[in-house]
Image (tube, rainbow, N blue to C red; front, side, top):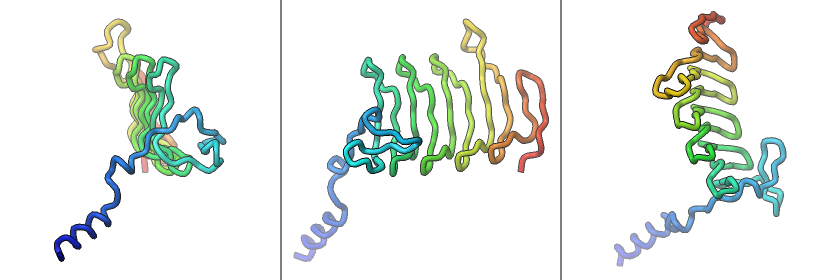
Length: 166
């Protein structure tokens, strides 16, 4: 009897199975947008949960998660061919963490990082020889600190100096 009571209590504390708790993505285009805030059109309350937006061909255009009406976590945008065009990370509605942009071919176009909405850390952008996307070239490389360029930057082989990074 004790064992059955303990098992029942443990199951009750665990809550419902994940399949019951999981939320289907809402249609991002059906939400009301007020600046950077997304609202439930029925209640006008800030929306929380996964969202997805589609191209007219029923391919995913954009997906991510909103918390209290603002982006939170990884947000992805896609090219018409289905490849990722942009992957960025948010915290409480502000860019915070890595961001990557991609060409239609899938090759990396740019990589940067944010802290509390400001560029912060290594920045790199790339270009490719037309007709031979296997030859990757760094177009620009440098560092950001609290939204300002710092240290040495290289732009198409030309060096520029900014105040030292903190």
